[in-house]
Length: 239
Image 1 (cartoon, rainbow, N blue to C red):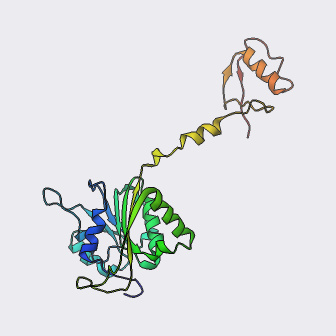
Image 2: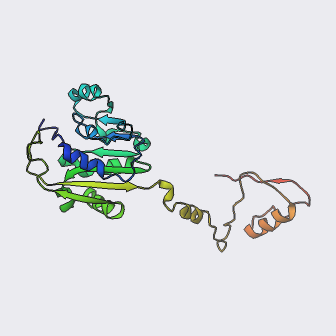
């Protein structure tokens, strides 16, 4: 248990994690370090007393039967090697404290659009000495918020105590299409007309003689200016 850094999430803390979500339409939820299911167990129920369906990843395979008995679908062992997370709308996690930044960034990166709510060691943010931690701090500034909770793993409800302050981090990721990607595409299509031979024909194109002749003169390609009027010309671009 020490090697896997398993600290079951107290019920009140798990409920706090769920309360951070602004989008309450839980289409597809994944718990990336599920343990014995403490976070999914605290999921809010809707008007019909239905809880959202939660997929689980848990590196300790001995806990998989417990998760399945609770009707959670186990979809992986090691979250850091998990692929296909773009289909989820919400991510919840209480990852190993030593790898909080790495797991949280993985959760952010795998989403196409959605929200992440996580419990991590507060020192991950208070002491951002690494590139990963610096990036996480910037993401929180730009796309989320954080609530620091002292002594979160102490008290009667805690299965395993730890003298640690935690940070409940909430991130909201917009759809990738909201980013300004079209501008860069247009820039790459721009042509500098001042450079010699900057004009480039498509791979195959039939053009009137007058147009071809003018372009040949502009590109100074010998032997092609004397093309006869009305001739169908097919030019091929060579690599």
